[in-house]
Structure formats: C-alpha cells, structure tokens
Amino acid sequence: MAGAARPGPGVEELSLLEKLLGLPNGNKYGVQGERKVPVLQTNNGPGLTGLMTIAAHLVKQAKKDQLLGSTAEEKAVVQQWLEYRVTRVNGSCSKEDTRIILKDLNVHLEDKVYLAGNVFTLADILMYYGLHHVMVPCVSSHAGRPHSARKGEIP
Image (cartoon, rainbow, N blue to C red; front, top):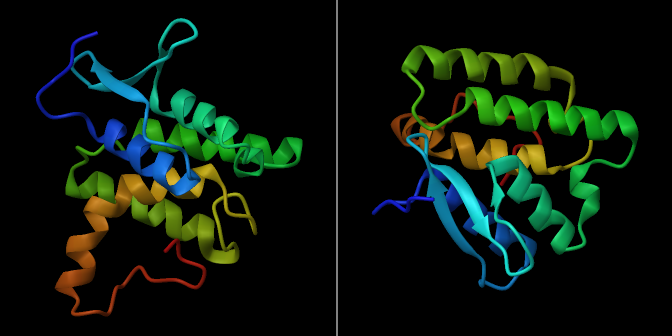
C-alpha cells in the first residue's frame, strides 16, 4: 500500500461518511495504486479495499443496515447505484461524462425521491459525495438557481 501526499477522493468521502454515521474518528485510511483506491487498515485482520466495501463496513459498524436496503430488491438497487458511483462517477470525469451522468440521474429520479425509490440509502450518500465537487460550481454559477435542484434532493 502506498500512501500519497494528497489522499484520493474516496478517502475524503469515507471520512465524511464516518462523521455522518456518528462513528468515532479512529480509522486509518490509505490509498493503493494509481487510481488511489481507498484502503482501511483494520486491527482485526487484513485491510479492506475499495470505496463500496469500506462504506458498507462503516454502515454495519454504525448499526445502520437500513442504509444498505431492507428488501432483496432494494439491496440490489442500492448495490447497482453503488457500482454506478464507483465505475462512472470517479472524480476525474470530463464535462461530457458529467453531462451523461447527470442526465442518467435525472431520468432515473423522474418518479423517485431517492436512488432506491422512496428510502434514503448509502447509494444516495456516496452519489452526493461523488458529485458534490461537480455541482458546487453549477449552483454558484446560477446565482442560487440550481438547474439540477429537485424535490427530495440530498442535503
């Protein structure tokens, strides 16, 4: 495992998730490889690797399993959007990639409040964290009139 001077975006997201879940700040994160894949050093065994794996571990550690979905279908949808987040929303997207991602999300959210339907899940949290750096300039450039604002938007 090679740590970099600046942690990857996944490490920042995991630290924010820890805080949101009310977990104590004690986890040690690093990054691995050129893509700066997050790694969690555990006291009880081998480190955990990958944004989705570590995020799900933190949710279970906080005893907030409902964020992973309640039914088999909900769990599958949450997993689907977590995969989308990791494979498509990677922090180094081009403007065209970002446009496609936002279009995909708008189409999906036309008749839903959250990614998995009507329940707030880990997929919503990680998608928000992943898109936040893209959306902040959009919101500020529209003088408080975000074109992507929608009912039920993640705070």
